[in-house]
Length: 256
Image (spheres, rainbow, N blue to C red):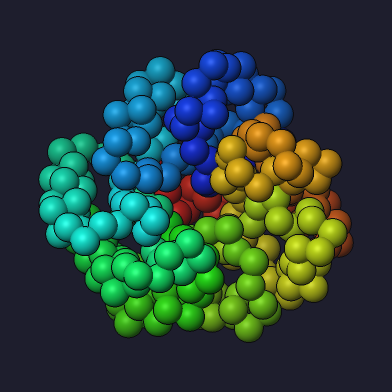
């Protein structure tokens, strides 16, 4: 079986000492591709270095994570726009709104999200969305920009059936990760009602490890555990989850 991890920060410092082993474990588990969301300007070179070392496996996005959007966000986004014109990227991400840690830059986050969506449309790229404690705010901005030429993933989905319906109606995909395996994660009530054709797999490594590794460093090699949980909840075979989610991922990241 083949799998894709649509969201992993394997260029981060948590993997500096053993990234080669992490990639080896990833491939041994059937995870053939890892899509890497960018965080800020400082993470770009680390991410590209990993792509250079593993060009068939590690594929970079470009964007500014909402937690790293600053008051000078127009200058931050000038750099993103410049890089978008210099080479191929898989997506604009991870972008969005995060109201969990700090609400003081909410307006700046909203404007940065809108601007980066416009960049993605200009370059015919999907977007990968972060919406912690901000689903409605993020959804409304994306909806306002949806003209039939916008697609992407709502990453780390933890919402309701109603939220999932809204994402599906936008033509977007739903990123499912380790939270789906948590006893009180809530997705056991939601995933049976979500179409498999709208689901992609992700780890968000090194964060949000699936059960039985919860609380430990997450790794792309844990993707099959997430896939098995989805298979159990939807009462389908693991092989079907692997095939459909992999096909979904390659539809989104069509350049790779």
